[in-house]
Image 1 (tube, one colour):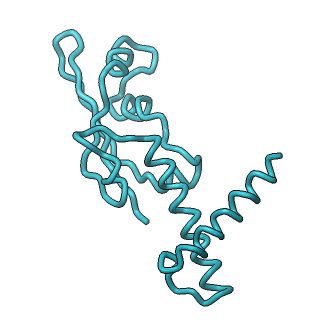
Image 2: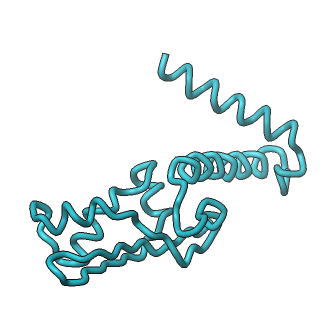
Length: 136
């Protein structure tokens, strides 16, 4: 899995055009934090904006545009808008399925868990049960 995307924002402040863009390795962020980072601070740093400035406030009123999506994140970008919640949920599910695939391969010699939907669903259910039991 390799998910990369460009996040950008553009606005005018006192007649000056300010633009910023950053390249994101989404897998890195998802693996470390379980969610995408706050993007406005990253965009502000890239544009060398003070986080306590009017420019930063103006930037935050603009919509972040997403482009150059690579990986399955492409499914969650429409007309430059990223469905963050849907991506984070799908990424987490895919990450779990990849780990379950490793378990099925190691213990049951199953090459492709997707071809065994009943087993995949049983393993996912067992995972979720274990996760819920841990929090109870």
